[in-house]
Length: 139
Image (cartoon, rainbow, N blue to C red):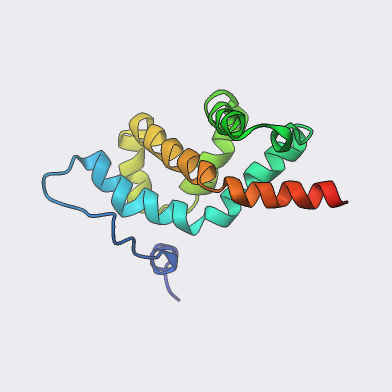
């Protein structure tokens, strides 16, 4: 039977732009080697988690301007600790044991990197949320 770690690593796609060089800091290397591929893998789940967050907060997000939507995403990730911790769990749950050991050595800095990547991914998907908004209006 194949190990959990091997199965996790097999599921991840390579990200060509996420280069790893010898002169990188360990945090930057971890970001490119682990965080980016895991967040890419978990992207649909992260979108669903944010959609659920918006629904639980009475769909106010859908009536906002683009600029206010970007602020909403920023605030949700930075100020709502329950939601933030949920997002971290979605990502950390896909770490191998070795990656988890590396993560706990500097979790504070890596959490910041992780949440910045997640935040940018959500912001980049405003069109996805606009389509959901249209579906809600049609109901």
